Length: 356
Image (cartoon, rainbow, N blue to C red; front, side):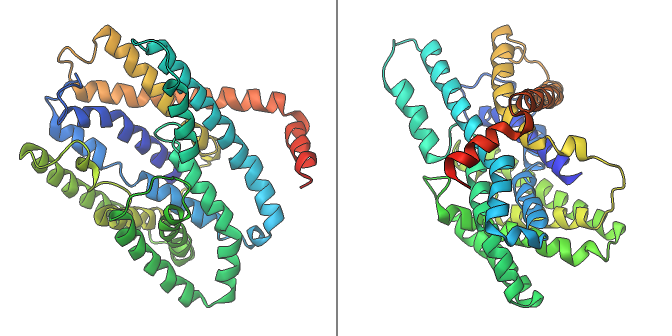
């Protein structure tokens, strides 16, 4: 359930991002008559990325079989690494084609070199940085499990909480040019490990009322943060680049609110089987950005979003449409991939190539 909600929350962040940017950038011609609502939409969804990382940690670190390097890396290669490579290259090609098609100054090599440089740095498309970072955490998973099993539960718990503090202190005050930089990956290690710790803490002692209170507490903190941002924009103290510093994954309030929300869901037992939908959230995440881009291009060309249309209505429709189209794309991709990879023939060829 949390994975699905976090996936929707990411879409909300990116849909409302343009409207939020328009509040401080006069060149973005979008409706800005509902600034408070736009900022609340955007800020209340900021738990998404931290919760995604905590979910990964909770699931991966709780399975001791994942400490076996070869088996875990082979499994991760099939499930995460190979699709990530394919889509990062595909999105780089899409960016190059866009650059060439939309250029008004003729062709130059920067149209090709800039996307390739972004691919190498770990940001072939603005949302794909997450794939580089999560792959880094996957590489560390067997090592973390072995370390976890070599010390007491209490010691691992203490270290997890310390790393969350490092997540805040290091991440909020640092910049990283490479999304696969080991230092950047380590910053998310706090979320990764605390996800496992919180899951273990509440798994056998679930209290739904407490869980609901945790979730409401986390959302309340984000709501207060939205009001602070709104005031900053009205006062002119929020710049286009700095306006997001309070809501990035390493912001102190986001660290606290995200862990509260994750703790809340860890206390609630959802009996309905949501595996079909949650199983494609990885691909929904991948597809949603390009779906949103072309949807915004269409809306801009028809001037639907530029003529004083109520942004709240447009935002809701965009969120629903982007999620639905991305879900359909994910289903079609799975069918296509299963067709060309029948009986794991692609994986088998790669295994032979690298003698795994």
